[in-house]
Length: 384
Image (cartoon, rainbow, N blue to C red; front, side, top):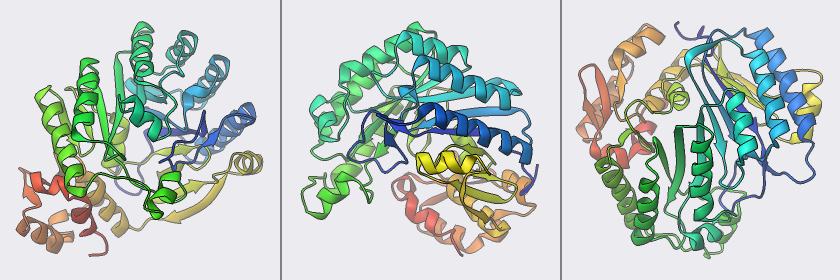
C-alpha cells in the first residue's frame, strides 16, 4: 500500500514503570512504587479501543512491549495486559513476532509462563554490561549473574528468540572491560544482540555530572575502537550486522524494528508512545496520571502532526540507510511513486563522492566509513 494510506501492521505498547531510574535514562519511565498499575492498564485498554475504531487493524506482523520495564508487572497483571492486547489486535500473521523488553532479575517462572501464554515469543533483556562495577556505576541494580540466570529461566520457559542490549562508551569503560563482556555475551549463544553507544541526554544524572566535568567518558577514538571491536567479534561469531546497532543470526533480525527502518506505519499505545499512520504522527501524554485521566474522554494525545510527502521521503532515507543492506529504489517507488535518485540526486552524489555511500544493485548503502559517520550522512537528506 502506498504512502500515506498504509495500514499499520505493527503495534508498540509502552509500560512506563521501572524498579529504579538508571543514571543515563531519559525514557518516559517512572519508579514503580505507589503507581496505579491497574488503572494504567485500564487506560491502555481505552486507548486501544479508540485506536482500532479510528484505524481498524489488518493482520498484525509485530508487537513490541517497551518501557520502562514491562516485566515489573506481576504475573496476574501481565496476564491481564496481554489478554487486553489480544482482544483488540486478534488478527495476527502465523509468524508474528511479539517482543517484550525485560530487565534481568524481573522474570520468574510464573511471569514467563504468563508471557508465553499471552503470545510473547521474543524477549529482549537490558544487560548493558557484564562488569558488575560498571553496572553499579551506570545505576543498574542487577549483576552479571542475574542476566545469565534470567536467560536460563527464559529458555526453560520455552523462549528461543532471545536478545540482550549491551552498551559501550560508558564512563570508566575500557576495551579490556568491553572484551570481557563480549566474552560472556557470546558464550550465551543468543539469536540477537543490540549494541548502543552511550548518549548523555538532558534531564539525567549523567548529564548533570557531565556539565560538572565529573563524568569520565572514553575518548572519541577509544569509543570508535570499541564499536570496531564489537563489529569484528560479533561478525567473527556468525552474527550479521543488519543495522548499525543490531546483530543477528540469520533469520532473527528484529522484524518490529525493521518496520521502523522501512518507514512503515505502526500503532503507538501507552503514555509517551509515538505512532505513525495515515500520513500523521502522534505523541501521547507522558505522565501516568494525566494519561489515565485523558484516556477517559479521548485519545490521550499530547501532540499530532501531519507528515508531508517530502518529510516521509526524507524519513525513508534516514531510517532506511541505518540498515546495512541499505535502501532499494523499488521500495521507495512502491511507497511514493518516484525514484529517490531523482528526489535526492544532490545528496546522493555528495555522499558518494565523500565515500560514505556506495551503490548496490538497486540502491545505496553506507560504506564501511559511513557506518561510523551515519548521523552526518542522514543529515544530508533533511531539507535538501
